[in-house]
Image 1 (cartoon, one colour):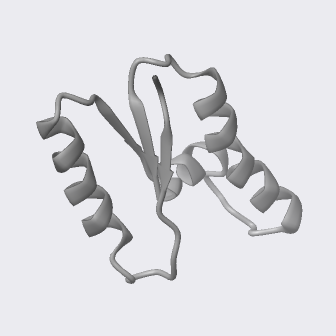
Image 2 (cartoon, one colour; image 1 turned 135 degrees about the horizontal axis):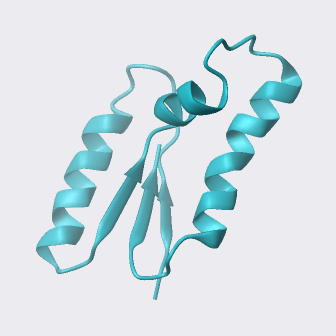
Length: 79
């Protein structure tokens, strides 16, 4: 069974800390985890970001596509 956990919030609100702690808890239970960070995805898709509506839609849709097509053996945590 695969599932996704998405952490959203303002910059500096603790998403990375919560994701890391959640990841550790899941891995301690033997559940494989993959953490995706939107900042890293954005750097690959838009190395020189303009932050247009179209660009933002592409960047935000890419993790959804990744989760939909990824191997179903791991849990995906995204923030």
